[in-house]
Amino acid sequence: MLNIDQLSRAILQPISLRFPDGCCIVVRGASGSGKSLMLRAIADLDPSTGQVSLDGIDRNEMPAHEWRRRVTYVAADSGWWLERVGEHFEAPDIAAGYLVRLGFHGDVMAWPVTRLSTGERQRLALLRAMVQNPRVLLLDEPTSALDPEATAKVESVLHEKIAAGVIVIMVTHDAAQAKRMSKRRYQMKDGALSEESA
Amino acid sequence: MTYSDLSYWDIGTAALLLCINAGLSIYYQLGVAKRLLIAAMRMVVQLTLVGLVLKALFATVSPWLTLLCALAMIAFAGREAMARQDRTFVGFWGYGLGTLSMLMAAGVVTLFAMTTQFHADPWYDPRYAIPVLGMILGNTMSGVSLALDRLLSDADNGRAKIEARLALGQSFRTAMREPLKGAMRAGLIPTVNGMAAAGLVSLPGMMTGQILAGVDPVEAVKYQLLIMFLIAGGTALGVFCAVMLALNRITDPRQRLRLDRLQLP
Image (cartoon, rainbow over all chains, first blue to last red; front, side, top):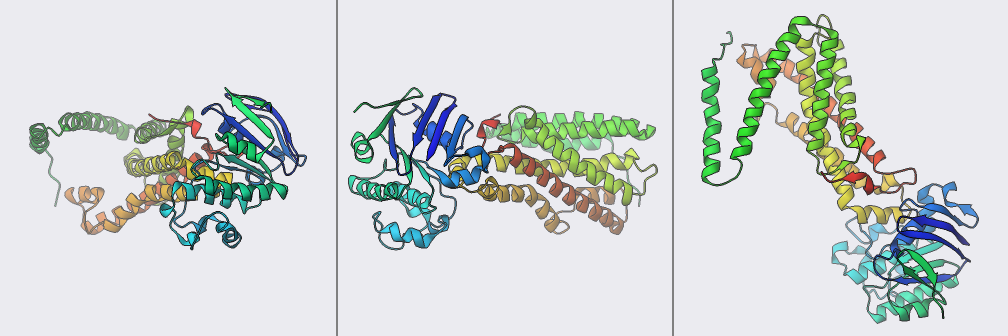
């Protein structure tokens, strides 16, 4: 259970939301409306006010890096800091089990990061976060660089994670994807979050 | 062997070389003539004034005047170190970070040298203390500004990498490991190179000066070694302090990357 109470920061109006385990919400809205800022604030990557707690434990009661391990933000174009793909994974063998499902063939873990396309980087960044088993995934346009086929693969893996109890907050531009992913859909407009009417 | 006094005529003829350079720059439109001449003029004025100040200072041997002079040198070094960085912290820390590190490093090393190796009487004799501080400070300043410049630009340019690591739950210290190593190296490499090349490629300036002034080369080498060790120690200490302070300042208790605390000049 993730509980967000009056979370607020510059540009963003106070947000209060509750997420039971295995819940997915999608957030849509124009560029610059504050979607990424909201995800970053939940992950405590930027200063914000208000309370955020996971399973009744406030995020300030644990060191920031432990919070982010449980509540993990994945940027649309996440960074890679070492030479080879595999070096970025905490458990490369667990990750390897997902590679084919995400559309990879061959030994991508041994590749240099520079060999990856934008879409490949995007899928691997999601996988990198996922195999650390966070309780909450904050996904910033996780399929923006993917074709429909690869998008379907990512969604199928995400559905499986959600069914296993992971909470997903997903920002997307794609209305059809929003419908596929969740019944709880929100709009961000000028920093104000509102629930979409069905 | 004794040393021979220089006449102003001797200095003037040496300055001719610079005028030739400036002429070449104007001819080939390299655009450095003006900066070259301004820098040369600054040097002449600054050194002449310093000569006069030192003469007065050495005549009085006052601890307070010596301290005042030392603090002024550190204050100038702090400004100079900040001016050499592409990015600095906003507010007090922009100036304070480098200056505090140098105050700490150059101060400690100079005090150490004055009270142990140099048998001056009194121990703070400005004839020793001020030139020693100057040499340590000059090198520490380069090291500190190189290290800070590297750390802050790597943090700024490498934001995606660092934040990806933070987002995955790594500690700030871990996420900054590569920029930290790069900054330490950038700050210390000039000193390491200087020690490695000493004597083979160049004769260090102080030793050259002493030899020109008639000192036995073996004695001059001993002094130079002492100074090199003090310089290396001071630079390492200053770079370490500056990088650690900067690392602290660029994050907060929630281990965020606070690039909002940086500014471009």
